[in-house]
Length: 257
Image (tube, rainbow, N blue to C red):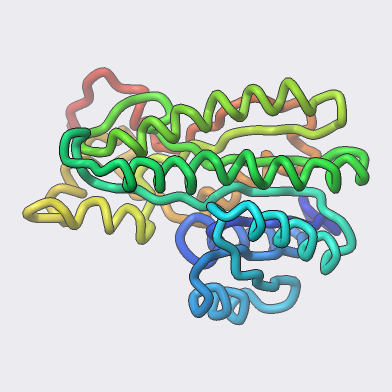
């Protein structure tokens, strides 16, 4: 029996990176998936590559009307809704002084407010199924700071606490809410982040040298962790954070042998 056999899922930001990796694993595990993304061409290409069981709905997760339409249309297409993966996220690279108010607000809208919006409209559908799973994509930055990304770090910290609050509110409805927190994962967002460095490859290697396992993680690694958290195997897990980072934030200091 596949972990997610017969489950219906929405994955925001699913056209690339971790969202696409999660979509791929969900399909392998028997789910049907609606990929939601603001990037129309990338979304269409993603579902074409994913094949049967995947469809695309163009969605700007910062727009309440878009999110409400996404949830309603996805539930209609899929015959209901069991899982929502809130993966959509952006990052700006600037310190606080150099950041604009508009940049700050955009990061918060995409990374945090969108989760409020999807939850608001998805919960009634999940409740009709007798419960379900909401999975929010945090980060190692849900726990620790990093340089020149104050809005991103603040948003991921907020998302961790929002996860706990939602788990408390909707646990009685059989809805589990968890937070998956990736470490250094090879995604377009990571590449965007490190390209601001003088030597992006060297900078990335320096960061990887601080990871005890020493390995880059990939979107499908997060997909497998997500599939577990959204499956019945994790029925006792809610309000929790699962860090998948090769030991990165376990270290006060680490020197590769």
